[in-house]
View (cartoon, rainbow, N blue to C red):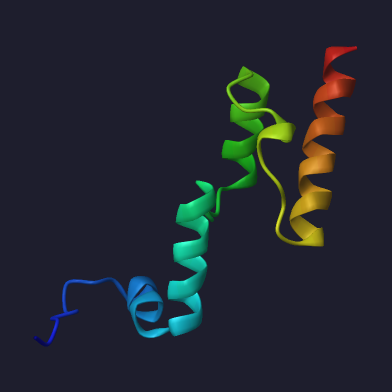
Length: 80
């Protein structure tokens, strides 16, 4: 049976067409993790509210890690 992907957004079409991405998704389901993108402002807000802690997630690239460090350092300075 041929599947109709016309309702899938372009970002998900890539996922549906790529065997590597499908395998990654399967592996992520096994360990209970998801990959997502979030704005720096939203992350800052969640960290400041105490809803999220930097130990709860890991950065997937150096630029993101530096941004998280800056957010955390700014929060430490603000609290002093």
